[in-house]
Structures are given as structure tokens and as C-alpha cells.
Image (cartoon, rainbow over all chains, first blue to last red; front, side, top):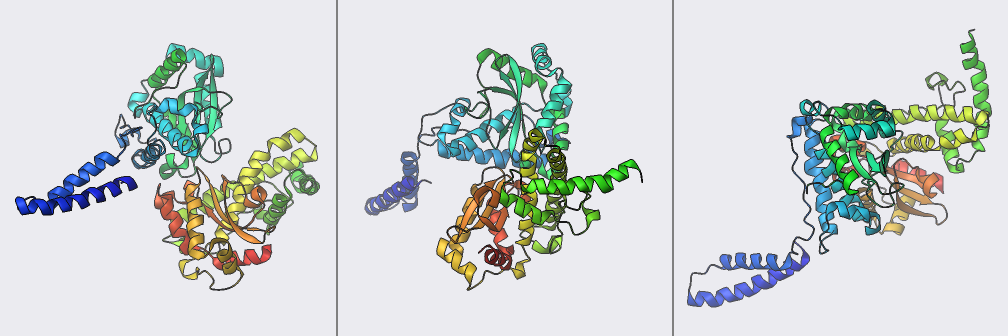
Length: 267
Length: 255
């Protein structure tokens, strides 16, 4: 509870107990407890800001174990319920009392907005983006890049296999050192491979060479793979293709190409 | 002797010795070179690995205690992974980078020298930091902060008291975004102990000029097995296994 609401609760509760003593004399039956509860409810309603930027952790489209054996269930659970939830709690705290801004729109000036918005606003977008581009392996293997996406991949990377190889190289521990993400982005009429540190993403002005629109991204923070892979990040990365939903990636491509804006996310 | 063996046993060491002289005069920060040199000397050339025939390769140091010694603050499983996988990889990759550096230096390939800086920083820093880390940890029973002396005086002077220092350093450790380290370091210019954090494997002395006294690894690999996402619990617990004797020794050496 915020300090303000505590103060208000105390005031109202104090008044309520004064009130109840008067009332008791007349009715004898109003419980002090009922009045205190009412008082607390009023205090909360007055003091709590109308949930300005009530960002939320979106539910996964699949159960925690759905991405096994490539990403383990415990990792999915902790990654979603703890790590992503912490980013959401923190971005809500950081944007409390401010005008509501869509999480995609919040990315552009995240660097200027300061570390709390950069790290937690970035963390929320990145993870919301991540969950939706994955699918259980049986479903994922039925998906493939659309004709338009395939053409773009071939133009920028030569072939899908070459793009994957470049992506894996960029995601290697020696190439993306420490914590970060690796992305395929639309930039102009090309696809670009970009690595970003911590919870940055290419939608943020000042992070990549220019603002770019991710269509595919991989979390290479240790928390994304440690329980199953320990330090074997390359194995995690090469296994990850098994859960990529290329239909969603193709949708992402179509969206950013048409709208010249970041892919919307749930939450 | 085969040609390959001849190269390995005679020419390579000669290049390495010549190259080592060049490395010292290279653009690497003097402090990084000095501390690297200390860590590069190998006691047993045969364990040097990565073909560094001159014996100037980095070596994974043995821990001064069993993997289980720091339990429950840090589990045996974490210690084994951390030492035999993570630190070991830094050592291996540092040696690879050093070999490439020596080769580039010996032919004056400045472009390659420059392009190796990232690998040297990551892996050199990783090796330095972890070597310091193992030495400033000890079993619970052996960890006690001195009740008097230069370390206590320095901590009291800068932080007020031991508990305040722990609070401040803990907050900084928890606040590191992504991967990095928390440090107590000695500032030779002011004669004071300071708290600092560095990102990734950036080594304290080369980055800030502070002499490392106490390092706390806050990369997720340092605590994920035992504490999952709850870094504050790990940072809280690690104070139980700090070797303050070692920290005080380093302070004395730094002055």
C-alpha cells in the first residue's frame, strides 16, 4: 500500500472508530470491525491511483511444458511467472501516475526515460514478444516462412539456413557477451541481424544504428537456459529453432512491413 | 622430430617470448598487463594447454577448498559448474585469444590486434575476476570480519560501520542490470576503500583504477541453481562465506 493510502486509512479508521462509538449508543449493533473494513475500502479507493499503466503479464498460449524438450517446463514457469512478472511490476511502478502509453510506443524513447523504463519497459516488451513467437515443437514444425518473408530472408541472408547460421553466430557467448537478445529486424527494405545488451531492443532510439522493427528475437540471458543447459548456450540456441512459430514470424514481418511500427504484444 | 613438432617446440616458444615483450608494450592498459602477467605464469608447462609452449598460458587455479565448502550459501553444484565450466571456459578462450594476439603482434598485424580486444577483455576479465573471487570466499566457520585493524578502520571510515557497508554493497550488487560484479576496492589516490560495480567481465582495476579487495559475482550463473531469480537472497547469503582475512591481506598489499 502506498504511504498516502496508509495515512488515509488511518484517518478514516480513526474517524470510523469515533463514529462507531457514537453509533453504538444508538444502535448497539454496528460492529467496529464492519466500520473499519468499510473505512479501509474507502481509503484504498481514494488513495490508489486509477491504474494508469496497468501493464500485465500475458498468459502463455501453451502450457509451461509445451516447449519440451527444447525449453524445459521449470524454466518456462520461472521465466514467465518470476522474471517477466518482475519487469511488469517494475514498469508499472516506474510509470505510476503518468499518462497511459502502449508498451510498444514506450520503447522509442526508453533510453531518455531512464534506466527504470529502459530495463523494465524493455523487459516487458521483449518477453511478451518472445512468448508469442514460439509454439510446441509439433506445431512449430508445420510452420514455415511466408513467401514474402522467404524472399526477404533470401535477399538479405542468402537462404534460411544461412540466416540461422548467422543468427547462431551472433548469439554465441563470445559474440553477445553477458546478457542480451538477438533479433532479426526489418530495416528499410532489408532484414538485419542485431544483438542488443540487457533488456534493450532495436525499437529503442539510440540502441541500434537506427530504430528497427524486430520480427524474431531470442533471449540469451542465462536465466533463459541455465536450468537445462547451464553454460551451454550454443546448444540452447541451436535447439531453439524447433519451437519457432514461423507463421507468427511471417505475421510479424507483414505487420512491420506495412505499418512501419513495432509488433504489438499482449499485456 | 616432425616439422609440426619442430614448430611447436622451438619456433612457437620463440615467437611467444618475443611476442610477450611486445604485449607488455602494447596498448593494453598497464594494470591489465601487470595483473595478467601474474595470472599467466604457469607452474607446469604441460598443463598450459592451447599450445602455448613457452608456458605463459593462463591456467585454471585450483580452489582453496572443496566444492561443498561454501554450502549452504553456495551449493557444491554451483561451485563445480562455476569453476569447472564457466571459469574454465574463460581460461581456454583467453589462451586462444592470447595465441592469436601473439601471432598478430609478431607480424605487426595491428588490425587483428585491435579486433582481439573484445575477446581479451571478456576472457581476460573473466579469468581475473573469478581467480580473485575464489580466493575471497571461504567456509562459513572461517568467515569473520576483524574487530580491529586497517580493514575495519577503512570500512568504518567510508561506510560508517560493517552493517552499513554490507547494506550499501548489497544494494549495488542487486542493482546491477544484466551481468556484472560488485566490488570493494582500494583507491590509491584517496587511500580509501570504495564500493563499485562493473558490467560483464570488465575487470575492476583496468576499468576504474580501484584495486580489487572483494568481488561478488552477480552473473545469473553465480546463483541461479541455488536462488533462481532471487538475486537478493544470494547476495544476503554470500556475506556468510567471505574470507575477510584475504580481503585485509589485499588491502595491505595495495597500500
